[in-house]
Length: 278
Length: 163
Image 1 (tube, rainbow over the protein chains, first blue to last red):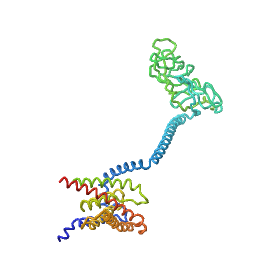
Image 2 (tube, each protein chain N blue to C red):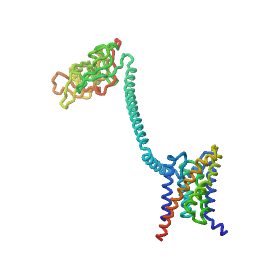
Image 3 (cartoon, rainbow over the protein chains, first blue to last red):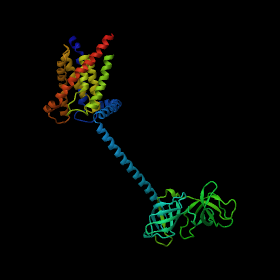
Image 4 (cartoon, rainbow over the protein chains, first blue to last red):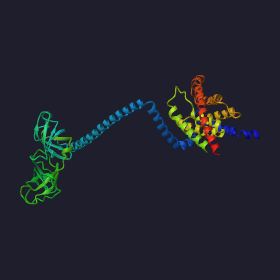
């Protein structure tokens, strides 16, 4: 017995060996995780994660030491991949935005089946800050003619003023020579829109005039097309009244700030006059 | 405590070096099993209990990291530690003999691994594996036992000197 006790470390090693063998036997031939296996691995997981992180650091260090060129090549490859992905992402984002804009235009055309539209892209803008002219990529070959209305789902943009075979120039709402027959949405009073005016605070808008005597025009009134000029269909949004003729000059009734954002315009609809074919 | 601190630090470093570096940088799979070498060196230089502890914990950690059968590596390491303890308990062998005995102790549990691999359905050629992988690995592992046993011996002597 004393001899056995003397070999105590060996007995301990033997018992541990048998336990380990039994533990391993629980998984051999069947790669499903046993209860004991799962318990041990769950307990060891935090340690394993830390060890793995350290392992990666050590491995990276040795890769840097023994294979610097491989690391550089990998770095270059990853950079190229990243650039490619960034380009792809920019393309997808641009496509998504274009899709959203075109969907909006499509919804507008669907909602107005009696109107005839031609989709066009903006290919040029005037260099002045008001963006008073735009150039589109459609012309006579596409059925566009002078004075055709140019709109978006948000409202009026302008009118075709010059035309070529594959292009046309559009006079926008911000152009001093633009004239449109309009209606005050709230009161249904009709008048004329046109002629730029700069307010004391620096805001630029267009005048509204020829309203009937005693017309109740107020700041914030929405101005829409009246349809009387037979160019713009009735009810398209033009802008909002931002100032009134307080000094009673008699030359205008108020100032309208247009809603369209010409600087971010990319796609528009060219609208044929009623009865015409674009 | 110095000897156990040295043992724990060495075992951890060797485990990291083994699993991170040697697993990627080796010659046709020939590489020393450093943690086993640490367990064997601890058995020779410190005591068999230290060797058993390193073999058990280290083996289980390797199994957990490498996703092999849990406990198999620990069992094999324990066999090696037990064998080397039996080989060296009567005397303290010289370096060359220690190398040979350690290599022999490393070779001993190989059949257990083969048996498990066979039961798990793996196909391999035993003789070819012994000659090309296991034997060189055992020789290299035995070789690594020598400096490690010197290190642990140094840690043990330092402890004695302080006492």
